[in-house]
Image 1 (cartoon, rainbow, N blue to C red):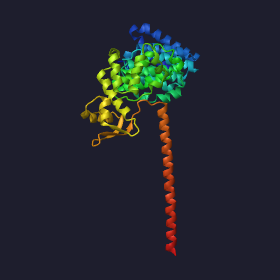
Image 2: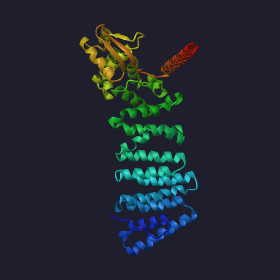
Image 3: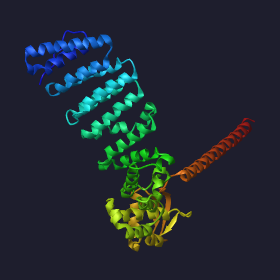
Image 4: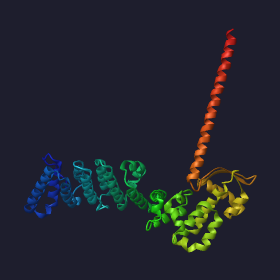
Length: 411
C-alpha cells in the first residue's frame, strides 16, 4: 500500500495532481512517467489560471480512479477532499453541478469497494455545495451507493429528515416522485423496514393528481404494490390509500379492479366478505403472494375494529364469535390479540360476556376522521376552559371567605 508523502507545493490541487499522476504512471517507468506527470501538472495549472474547474476536476478524477487500490483509505479520502473542494470554486450553480456529477459518477462506480468511505465522501461533497438542487442530486447518488453497496443502514437516519430536506431542496414534483419511489424500492427488500417502504410508496402515490392518475401506465403497478403491501402486512391496520387518485382510479380499471376491491374489503368489511372474495379469486391472491391464513388473521382483527364502532362501545361475545367465525372459547384469545396488535384498547367483562372498548384504530383516516378529531379537540379545549374558570371562581370565593374571617378575628 502506497503512502502519500506531502510535497512542498503550496497549492493542494497541484500536489494531488502530481502525486496521483506519479502513482498512476509508476508502472510505465521513469522515462515515460516524468513527462506525463509534468504535462498533467502544467495542464492543471492552466485550468486553474483560466478558472476551468470542470476540466480540472475531470483531469484529477482520471488519475484518482487509477490509484484507488494503491493508496490507504486515509489518503483516498484526502485526495477526494481536495477534488470535492473544486465545487466551491465554481462560478455558477450549473458549473458546481457538473463537477458534482463528475465526482459522483466516479465514486459510485465501485459500490462494493470502500463503501462507507465513498458514502462519507459524497456527504462531504453534499455539505460543500450551496445550491439546494445540487445537494439533492448528490443525496440521490448517496442513496443508490448505499443500496448497491449493501449499506442501507448508513442512510436510514437521513430518511427521518426527508421532510425538512424537501423544504430546503424545493424540488419539482417529478423529482419528489422519483425520490420517494427510489427510497421505497431501496427499503422494500429489508423486512424490518417494510412499513417505512410502504410510507414512502404512499408519499410517491400522493404526488399524482386526479388528471395524472388517469394517465398512469406503468405507475399503476406501484399503486397495486401499495395495496398488496398493506393487505400483506401483519401490523398495518390503518391507511388512507382510497383517498389517493392514484389508488381510486384502479376501481374501474379492467386489469386491477379486483385488487381495489380487495382493499375495500380490508378497510370497510368483515371476514365473511373476504371469504366470499377468496372463494371466487383464490388464484389472484396467490399470484400476488398473499397467504390465505394470514389474510384471515388480519381480517379477524379488522372485523373486531368494525364491531367496536357502535356507540355503546360494548361488543357482546356472541357477535365476536359470529363475525370472526370462531368458537366461544376463542373470543378472549382474539381480543387479547387485538390489544397486543394495538388496534383496540379494551377490557373483557366475563360476567356479562361483553368486550368494553375505550379506543379503537380507525381503519381509514381521511377527511371525516380529521374532522372528528378536530371536533374532539374543540370540545376538549372548551372543557379545559370551563374547568379553569371554575377553579378561578372557587379561588376567588375562598379568598373572600378568608378575608371575612380575618376581619372578624381582628375585631
